[in-house]
Amino acid sequence: MAKTKRDQDREAKHKEIVAAARTLFIEEGYEATSMSRLASTVGVAPNTIYWYFKDKDEVLVAVLDAEFSASVEGYLMLSASDPTDRMMWVASQLERVSRLVSTVHSRLDKSATINAWHNQFHSLSEDMLRFELQQAGVAPEMIEARTKISVFTIEGLLAHPIPDPEKRAICAALLGAT
Amino acid sequence: MAKTKRDQDREAKHKEIVAAARTLFIEEGYEATSMSRLASTVGVAPNTIYWYFKDKDEVLVAVLDAEFSASVEGYLMLSASDPTDRMMWVASQLERVSRLVSTVHSRLDKSATINAWHNQFHSLSEDMLRFELQQAGVAPEMIEARTKISVFTIEGLLAHPIPDPEKRAICAALLGAT
DNA sequence: ACCTGAACACCGTTCAAGT
DNA sequence: ACCTGAACACCGTTCAAGT
Image 1: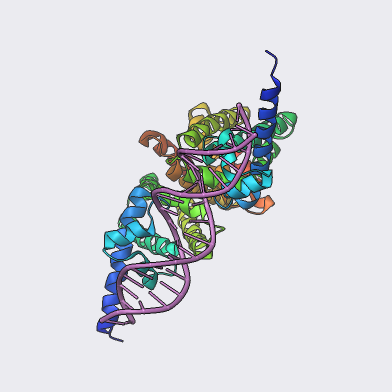
Image 2: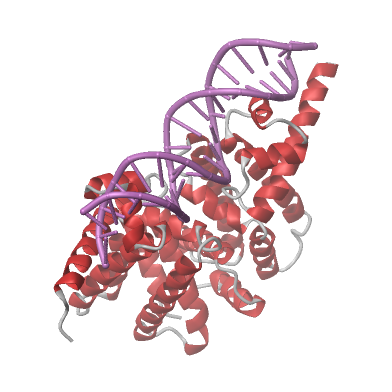
C-alpha cells in the first residue's frame, strides 16, 4: 500500500501545521493562538487550515496526540529507575503542557472530539498508575481509590506548579504502602 | 455610616447582575454566556454592565465569591458530622460549580483578578483540609504532602464526576491514618 | 450618576471563485 | 485537489451622546 505523491505532500503539510500549532499552543496558549496567527506562521491563508482540519479542536487533538506519544516514548526508556523518580518524571514531563490541560478540561462539554481524547487519556493514565501502585505493594481493596487519587494529584501538580522537593514528597506519599 | 439612597440603588443593581450571572455562568458556562446575554437577562444594554464591573472577569469573581460564601455557610452548619461525610459534602457541594473550576484554571494567566481569587481559595481549602487530616490522626511529617494530595483530589473530583460510592471510597482513603 | 446606540477590533468559520 | 479574498455572525469592550 504505497503512498502516492499526493498523499505524501498532504501528510507533509499536515505535519507542518501540527508542528507550528504545537509550539504556539504550548507557549502562547490555545485560546491566545488565533487561526490567523497559526496560518501566518505556516505561511498560508487562514481558511486554508480548514482544508486539513475540520475545526480548531481537531488541530488541538492532533497536537495532544503528538505530545502524548512523545511522552510515552520517553517513559518507556526509563522503566528501570526508581518508582518515585518515574512518577516525578511523568509529572514534570507533562508540566510544560500544563496550559493545555486546563484548555482540555474547559472544552470537555463543548467538543465531542476533545471529550473522546480526554477519556482515552485518563484510561491510559489510570492503567499506568494502577500498575505502579500494585508494584509498590498497595493493598488490593485500596487500589482503585488510590489510583484515582494519584491521577487527580498528578493533574493537580500540572495545573499548580510547586517546588521540586515538595513535589517529590507528594509523589512518595502517593506510592506509600498500606 | 448610613448608606445613601444612591448607594442602595447601586448595590441592588449590582446584586441583580451577580444573581443573573450566577445562574447563567453555572448552568450555561462562562464562555458560553455573552455579555449581551447577561445584559438582556437583567434587562439592560450590554455596555451598562461596564458601569458596575470593570470587565467580564470581575463579574466572574463576584459570582465565585457569592458561591463560596454560600458554601462556607453550609459547611459550618454540619461541623458535628462524620469526617468522611464532611469531605463528601464539600466535594458534592462544589460539584455544581464544576464548570467554573476549569474556567478559573484556564483564565489564571490571563487575569490577575482571577489569579488572586484562586490563590486565596487554595489557601482556605488547604487550611480546612489540613485541620481535617490532623483530626484524623495523620502523622505530622506527612501532613503537608497529604494536604496537597487532598486538595488536588477534590479538585479532580469536581472536574471528573464519578459515582457516589467510588467517591466515598476516595474520600475515606484520603482520610486514612498512617 | 447612570444608561444607551453605534462603533471598534477582534474571533472561528463558510463560501464562491480561482488554479 | 488545493488555496484564496471576501464575507458572516459573533465576541468583549470603548466612546460620545443623552438624561
